[in-house]
Image (cartoon, helix red, strand yellow):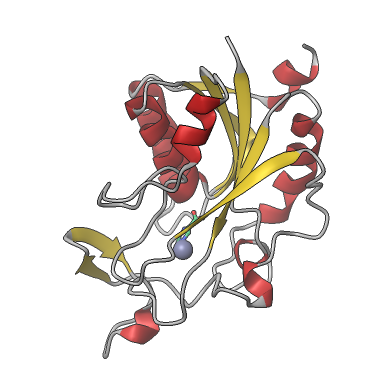
Length: 207
Ligand code: VGL
Ligand code: ZN
């Protein structure tokens, strides 16, 4: 058994004041730092969109954030412009301790399709390389924390199961967008139903 910690999208645009702010999203940064110390292998993901990305409402005439369209053959929520490649909002939070992060996997780089999961785009067409990397390191168990519970954490966890990893989501190390109230709670329930173990960071701090 070998475990890896996957830290999802700890970027300014998902923090208070950011373009797609997650309420108290910055609280997960110290949790992520603390968790890192308990893993031999830590990786991170970074949402990294071109300015003309198809998930931005601003790139569709007459559409606003929250509207639904189809993108790359799959349903797509439209978002405010966020995590534009090279912009300050796309940067990882300055307090996120990256010393133990072995590799960062960027996603959402193809304008024609979004990518919530750190493993694949939403149409499962292209892999980011994170799955192969973790398999090549002999990882069997993937522990996930970060932003956002109801999107990128959720889809990273579901793809992790698909890839045959044992997947654990550290609930207090995650916060959600909650476009509809309760989305995060429903995401956690859905993950449990899919075979994901849901746990709290204090359990890991003791081992
Ligand atoms: C995310 C919406 C759009 C996330 C990324 O990191 O959860 N959500 N892009
Ligand atoms: Zn995005």
